[in-house]
Length: 281
Image (cartoon, rainbow, N blue to C red):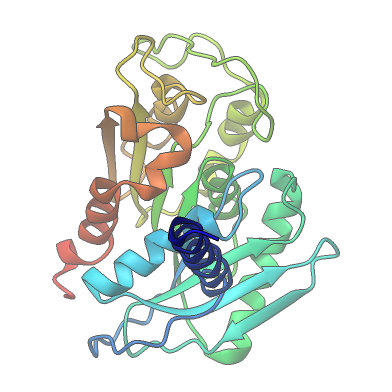
């Protein structure tokens, strides 16, 4: 066989081994040294519909390498709600928890139940009074359902990324719905938005909320799956009710729905909002 065959074979082997190692490591806690910063509030990362270890895996690796976040725990939620924790929560630094669901097609109600179970399980490792949540797509909707449920462990800071706050089908692909936002609210309120309206009185007044949406700049103001108007419709319900509500639009090709959690600008915005504005780093 020619030398080119062995070169191609060696490259192929490196790619396969590297891909396998990447796949395995993304669902494991990270153990590299991080700055000693007393932070009593862990941050949970919640994927969207059909989310996998890739949904936040590379973001968490980047946040650990560049900003000193520590991926302490990977919480795996089974379809029956049972939770398996990999790693140990440590509140002597900015602790992150990656939440994974073995049922990738989990719906919001079941994802909410799993999130509650994860927080209960984490409390057995170390007690904490509040949590931060970063949720992508449906994970952001689940986070809102959680904070409006009067939980025993409230949300201190929330980051939602491309969350369909006013869509007909939250956990399924559907035509992009871009209902106009008027002075008083969206021109149409989808069932999930109506559910938020009914429970918005449970919103914690000290909540800080960063709401991120994407615009591919191809017309229609959307990220390819969720319209900016859907994500930002929630502003009418939270305005003047919480400590801070901030909206950010990420623009360009890397603002695609499934690429927002791979966007370095989103990394920076999350870190700045959760920690640097509080001068913890």
